[in-house]
Length: 63
Image (cartoon, rainbow, N blue to C red; front, side, top):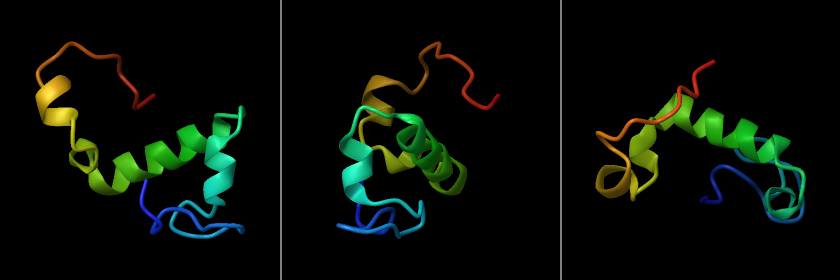
C-alpha cells in the first residue's frame, strides 16, 4: 500500500500503523488497514480488482 496509509519506522498515515507492522505475522492490523482502505476507496483502490474479482462470487467482508 502507499505511504499515505502507513509510515516507515513509526506509526502514522491514515491507518496509523508503521509499514513494517504490515509485514509481520500478525494480520490483525493488516486486515484493519485493508478494511479502512475499502471503506474510504472501495475496491477500486486495488488495481487488479476489475480484471480478477469484479463480477465473481466473493465472500461478504462487510460483517
